[in-house]
Image 1 (tube, rainbow, N blue to C red):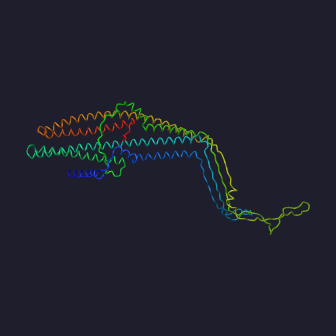
Image 2 (image 1 turned 180 degrees about the horizontal axis):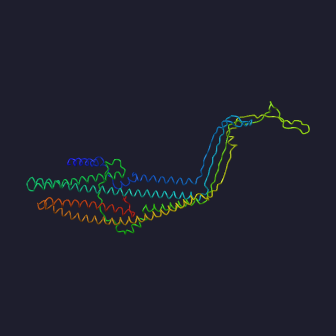
Image 3 (image 1 turned 120 degrees about the vertical axis):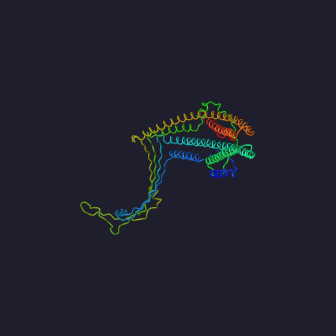
Length: 481
């Protein structure tokens, strides 16, 4: 068992030493930690992407006002039995055709749906900005809490180290007294047990400091967390002026500035826009269309005629009474290549302009159901706003009560420490002159150390709760230097 404890002590000691090697050149202040978290924290970066999506949705809403324009082009081969344009007879041949066109359409009136979609997109950008701000505030509070936890663990470790140093001196002195036969050997055993207990407490304090540093470094997304450390600083305890305010005053101020309330109010406005968009489906829509098309052919064409030498004439009738034949000359077509492509495109072009009016009469109750659904969503967003206000009121009153309680706990802990310190000094004097046994002295000493730790715990608990209460009143979490 002793060997296991020594191995664990060596292991955690090596881990702790890694924090004090070459990373000593950089010690982070609270402001640096908060600012770094604003840039690197995963949750903040993820929320920033939501804002980028809202910007894209706004561009999409703008695009609804623009016409839709599409171009088309095709080239076809007609292979097989087709009518010969020169003879009118069917024969196997291949003909080619090209078609080019462009068409455009624009919404002239669409029940104001496009306008409401644009306004909704603007509101969505505001909502995501509030969401980003809230995430930044939450991360800042977490960073402050983690930072104060490191300071607490550092000061608590100092208390344990000082206590262990004194107990080692006491053990050495007791060893000398035992060797001289002044005190019994049992007193030395008690002192050694006390030293072992304090050593365990110091190891626990070192581990707590190490874990708190790891927690903050991970919150900051630091890769080189082994060398992370904060600046050595002492946070004084001051009675904040925020406690001079009434809880209702803090709550009224919080309702004006809290981003979660503003975000809930914006969501109500978004739901109202959704309802207007759904009601726009009741109204008729008017659209305009324009199209342009042209074509070209690659087949041979008739460019003229010439007399048919093999069959120069043909009978077309008879003269009444004389039965004389009526003849007409026969001609054969003269074939030429296809007309120039550009000329064909110019001659065969055509345009089309149209208006389309669509009046909704019956659409399977889809429009009515969408309106009803939007009304439910609007009512839900109003309820969420009301719930957020109730939650904020409860949170503010609870934070106010907790802060006052934390201050009283700290003051009581300080009073207890003063009494324990006097008791410890008195016990120390009696022990050194042999008027108190080692067991009773160790009890007084343990109570004194516990009182020191309790003062540190209540101190930083009060500081953090004060930060939260000031935050609801609009005081920045980190004061700029």
